[in-house]
Amino acid sequence: MSSERSSLITARPPGLVDVLDRILDKGLVIAGDIKVSLANVELLTLQIRLLVCSIDKAEQIGLNWWRYDTNLTTRAERAEAENVELRERLAELEREVRQLTAPPAAPAPRKARKGGASKKGRGRIG
Amino acid sequence: MATFERGDERREETENRKQMSGHKQKRKDETESQTNEQGFYVYCVGARAALESLFDAALPAAMEADARLELIADDALAAVCSAVSLADYGEEALQARLHDATWTALRALRHERVVEHFARRASVVPLRFGTIYLARGGVEQMLAERRAELQGIIERLRGREEWGVNVYCDRAKLLTQIVLLSPRLRELSEQAARATPGQSYLLQKKIEALRADETRAAARRTSNEIERELARVSAGVARLRVLKDEASEHGDAVVKFAFLVARARFDDFRAAAERLAEAHAPAGYKLELTGPWPAYNFAGGG
Image 1 (tube, helix red, strand yellow):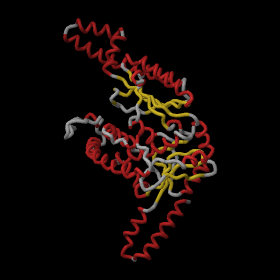
Image 2 (cartoon, chains in turn cyan, purple; image 1 turned 135 degrees about the horizontal axis):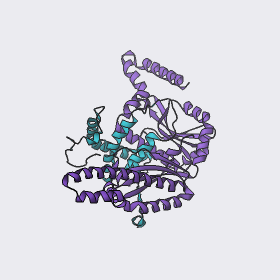
Image 3 (cartoon, rainbow over the protein chains, first blue to last red; image 1 turned 60 degrees about the vertical axis):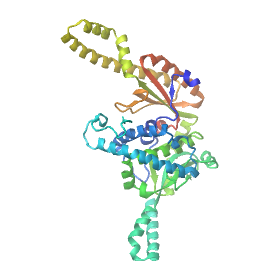
Image 4 (tube, rainbow over the protein chains, first blue to last red; image 1 turned 180 degrees about the horizontal axis):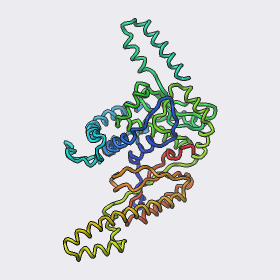
């Protein structure tokens, strides 16, 4: 395989952090009728980054509809079902993220290891 | 402008409903008519003719499952849009929704999928997440008012794609390498080996600080070299934000670039990236190439 000879890691699909960094932060800014304040985008990005680790994991186990599915509207139902499943998987992580990011002036949340062990004892975020 | 139209529509609708269902239902109806209001989410803008022809073939899903992608066009330009409910995309609702990381991440991915679909097939200006108009007229007016600027960007991006180059390093390996490469560090290490325990402790502290400094300097040199070399085979370069402690399976992120690369020059670009990856691998660096992306980092008017 040519990729074995290659020294570049070609990510296909690219990491979700890369996707989100572009969509949320780049692209032409046109002020529509709805004002979206991105003042909290830093916190949001942090939350999403933590979340993304688990989405990446979800992707490894096959919940990869957002990249590989050509996803014509007729497939929306299936996507929706997977969406629900993904949400459930992420709900637990989200709670954890909220706890970690709760204190406003706290140091970087990822350092707060105490009590961070998940029930399953694996899949540390960050 | 658009706001008036919408307000009138709503009043009319509420009036009708009131007449139909009587006063008892009033409260419920108002809530309903509010959630039924629509806005138009805009993904990207391109030449009208080019985009229209793409609507004959299959299209990706829109932001929400209950709407399809549609084109809102002015004379020469068109915007890829889809209807969204203001119950979720109204100003306050959206602001609240944005705090929900899962919700936002999924919508951002849908946005990307749509823009990617069109960017592969036409020259488009990708918009940032969350561009929403209350009426079609608002989108048309925007296309008319910004025509020159948008057409300029479309032309500049034609035949070009964004490629991401992420540079990671194996920090442990880098630290070891630094000691081998730096005479000053080698000397200090030798001294520490011969010193008494007390002296050795102080020397170790000094070595660690110097090692961190030199590692940072080396990483900066490597980043600059990669940027310089790849900029020679591309039409633009941007540095992306890297969070402190951003790690991945490939190691710690050192720097992330976006390059605007002509499709015709991609082989040269890739070859240059390969050479750099090979040259810096022994020191513990890894290069990751991602793309092609819609040109998010090069969509600004300037």
